[in-house]
Length: 163
Image (cartoon, rainbow, N blue to C red; front, side, top):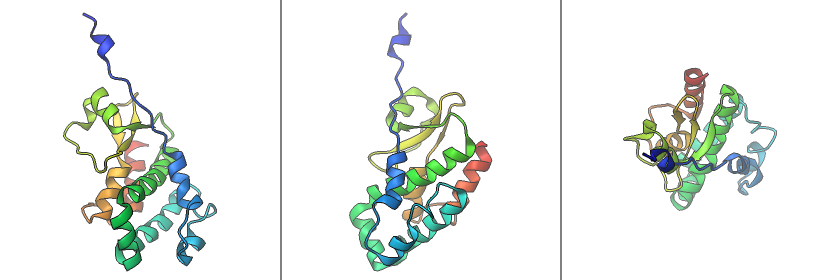
C-alpha cells in the first residue's frame, strides 16, 4: 500500500573534484609535471590523449606498475572521474555522479554488473535510466580486460552512443 515510501533514493557523489586532481595533485615525475597540467587537461575530448599516454606509462613503466599496485583504486577514481567529466560535458544531458549501490537499488540498469572498485560511482541519467561506467572501464583497461584499445576510443564511443 505504501510502496512508494520504500523507494530508494539516489546518493550523489560528485567526482568533479577528483577529476581536477589529475592536474592539481601531480607526481614529481617530469613527464607528469609537464603534461598533466590544467592547460592540457581542459576537459575536452582532445585532452583524453594525455590520459592515454599517462595510463600507458602506468601500465608499462616500473614506476607506473608500482604506483598501480599501491594505489589502484585511487588511480582508477581519478582517471575515471576525469574521462567521465569529459563524457558528461560533451553529451550535455542530465547525467550526474551517483554511488553505484544507490543506482543499483533505484533501477535495474545495473543488474548483473559487478563493481570494479570498492568506491564505485557511475554517471546516471534518471530521465533516460541509463548508466555510464567510466570507473569500471578504467579499471578494466588498467587490468588488460578492456575491449577498447585506449581510453579515447571508449570516450568517443560513449559520446556517440549517448549524444
